[in-house]
Image (tube, rainbow, N blue to C red; front, side, top):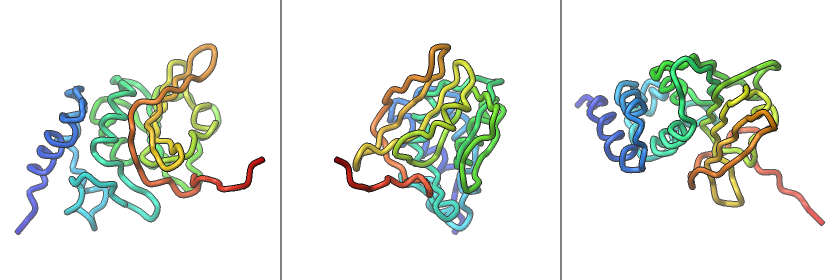
Length: 189
């Protein structure tokens, strides 16, 4: 029996996205259209579950709830320039919404110098967004990432203004930690 992925996409949007206060219909439309199973073909049957989906060793697609809430908070606009860090599904959603998207999925996950992105999205957790990521934001740019605060995860948004970069917490959210960004345990006085 073949899987009905179109029905699964619709169900995902109706039961995991819309019910979590994601009201941007552009996100709904993009998520209904993009075959999430293409990003993890060996786990296609899990693509629409309420779970993080490993697409490569140490790399995961965020749960539909988390990625949709994060994208809505970033307020993507057509024509903006975005960077998707370890975020192939979020990149596809942003492209469907009319953004120009560059993908970064190499070992260091560090954007090159001179970047001026309007929007940066990360599909994975870190303890704190690295300075290289906030430095890659252009004026008015926004970065969305899940940060770990002890055992809890919080989605955070960083905004670049003329006087610096601000941070605010968006919502509780969990994601697997990106490889290389694990919490550093040590002794403190």
